[in-house]
Image (cartoon, rainbow, N blue to C red; front, side):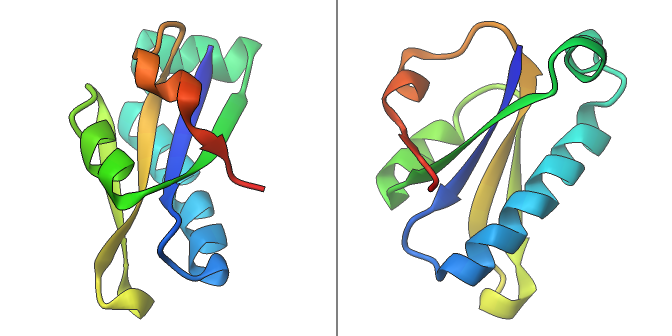
Length: 100
């Protein structure tokens, strides 16, 4: 059970770091009553943060239970995606690059 956070690699690193914090909290708050989120919080709390291209970002937005985050300090541009915790993930997530 894990939560994925995706950050656009085209944004500055400082904006990306803040976006990760917003995405974790915002995604949790949106889905806190979902049974998978409750299980994740109690038993796993694993998060995977990935740096993605604009194309990967757009494709990932089609995934169920996704929250889009924008950044006021970056022209209200979409900068990150948060996904409800779950056990099974679409195949594309296996190939995303970790945010290091």
